[in-house]
Amino acid sequence: MEQYRPTGFRILPPVVKNIIIINVLLYLAAKAFESAFKINLTDTLGMHYFGSEKFRPYQIITYMFMHGGFGHIFFNMFAVWMFGNVLENYWGPKRFLFYYMVTGIGAILIQMLITYLQISNLELKMSQEQINSVLSEGYNAFQQGKNFADPQMGKLNLLYNIPTVGASGAIFGVLLAFGMLFPNSLIYVYFAIPIKAKWFVIIYGAIELYSGIANNPGDNVAHFAHLGGMLFGIILILYWKKRFKGGNNNSTFT
Picture (cartoon, rainbow, N blue to C red):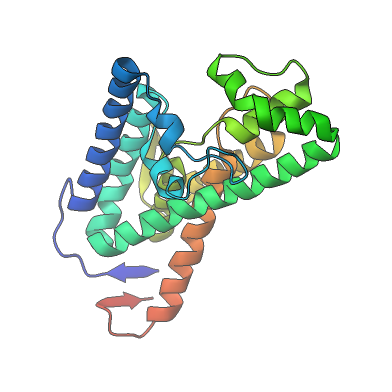
């Protein structure tokens, strides 16, 4: 198990505090811009598929600071504080920030890989004319609140033009780290049901995997982004453990 020398406990350490502030400010800005100027910041800063005309490289980072609604941002920021403050106090701000960003970026890369596979599978079943129609007319249809009547064209249009937003990928990475570093700590589900962190992470990961494979039509949750955050998290933690084992980095491993 990994043990770091604590540098003092803070209820709201600096990186966690600034992550929350940035997310809240961008959430309020998105609402204000939409209302006052009819500018959709969520569409601009959310992550679009690499093949979409709306894709911009900066979205790989900005997507994790955008949210779709109050409930979305509230529960994500609550999780950032609940688990992130423990990890930042334990690791220190630099390592925690690096971990948070890597898992967030890793999450969206996995999600885009899954999107690529879904698009490739759909396009094999469609004519080139249908595909071209989606590419040329799909985004404008969304702007008018419409979509294609053909199920395959409609689904392809969603994959190309609906952005992915939210901090959940990085948060699942944070949750994974908490479960690995503090496996026997109790988490209270719905503030009432106690469960050890290691089992909570395993169960939650299994649910996400099942939900991602099931791919229910009405499900707009990026389950594979969540799993991607956990995957990159475990890779990074195991890499650190191997690299710094026995090294002089103010850390000991047992």
